[in-house]
Length: 231
Image (cartoon, rainbow, N blue to C red; front, side):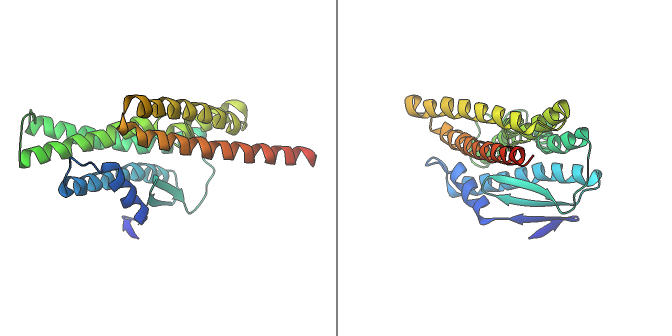
């Protein structure tokens, strides 16, 4: 564990294992794989710092853990926050990635108008640039999907709570289940019938979200039935 300012950060070994699996390709050498892992490490850390710094602004004490599923920012102290502040904290993560991606893109545009057709060190530079933009922009957009436990799903849940007087958890789970099932089906068909191996990870990720939200919905319904039977 280490600290970035006053924010404790813990990195699980599973983070590096999954990052290596995501970046592995028979066409890439160990240098490119190592650079990919560093890009993912820096980008996910920046994303979680976005959440953490937004939380600190509102009086929370954040703690960051990087793990095989990405990263999680939790709070060592709890405070009652308004819906708008909770939404701001959720959006701060993807926005931090967008800022990182834009700064890198802008610096490259000024310093290197083109990276096409380069070889050697320049090709390695192009590899780093391409993947920084992909992770920060591409994964940032993915994170905004209205599906728990993604940031977009958390925003959806907060807004549904505000609109229904605190009864937004169940509809948020239902929307998450439907969307996860649709993505898993589309991605899985792409893998099976089009040979799109790059869609294998999205398929597995969507299936894991489908399973976790389904289990949470079952647990929530059981609690609701239990609460109703005691009244």
